[in-house]
Image 1 (tube, rainbow, N blue to C red):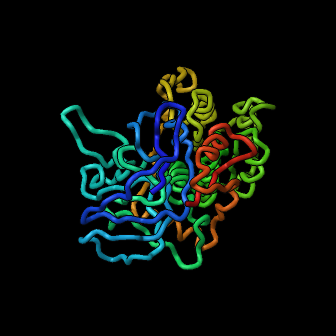
Image 2: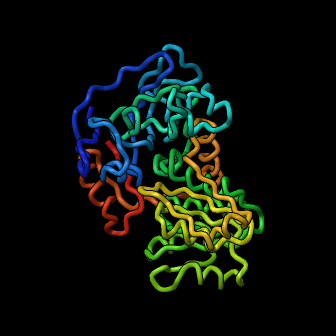
Image 3: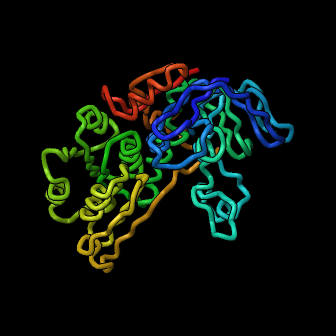
Length: 354
């Protein structure tokens, strides 16, 4: 099969690999659509380490090609998705309710991010075929009538963005600021609206993203190249600050700005993947006495999470298709990476089809 593999820093290339063999609890799916994530770009640049030769990608939509001997409740030929996070369901982290952190404890302590396996610790979805571990915990059938592109954001982008609002405990009547309106930030904006926020402030500078942000639920848009976003958000809230600030970029400046716009007792919900140490300014943190909360979230996974997200789409509560701005065949994946990594031509998400 063809697969996009990590070769070295700044190089992901299409290569030939064997179709995976599956075990009793696994499933093999034939990929029909996948995409590239910002985390894949961190891998490409060498900012997040993975082993050489690993197939990249963690957002699969496909058809069951083969089922393990112990897998029940599914049929070959069934259209399915699997989350970017594939929990086993039986680890200590899973049983504590933190499926994303599913991973083996070691003598050196708990391994974080253990639930993220595709394109991290096992071969991923930017290929013609994908092995899905613990299939009965992770495969979610696609409702009849939904296209691949309608559900393409569910495995990661939509799940992560919604989780930013959920972890921030957005309530009816809340004011929420979302820093960065990339695909995850746009999903966070939509999630905040669905959870009952009545004033949503989106921060970005790309006109196309700001336009989509309005359709996703943003009531106000702040262009950080024209005004200081902290000053503008405080003006929009009459000096009160926001109940929840969602950081969806992974930069010191956006993290700090999100902290500075919180009302007393507000929550900073962090979704960004950070490439370096963060500094918390003393004044913004009220010297630790402001009753603030800082929460972090890794994309929730598992079949029940995927089912719920697809129900949101099936019930016409959200249309994520506008996030797909470009389409490539798998043969052109290196070209797709070049476009996406350099954020050219107004790209938001790319659809990759074998």
